[in-house]
Length: 109
Image (cartoon, rainbow, N blue to C red):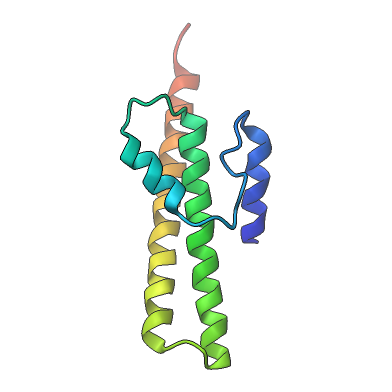
């Protein structure tokens, strides 16, 4: 299910989702560069989707590791709560984008 987010890549002309298995350092590096450094909206959204995907995958991985006895309960709870927070953020952003689209669609030209 999470791998289907990689299909978003075809919507952008940039390679924002080029490596779904990358670490979240791409977003941190982008934030360190500052806001006015020429990053496009598509790149920012692609980086956010990559980070979200990685966080959700980590939550799943920790859950499977706990079943196998390789991870502690604390690690699993932290990973799952972080994944839940990331998912809630993604849902909120999606809702704001849909609302903004509907506002633009209602504008008179």
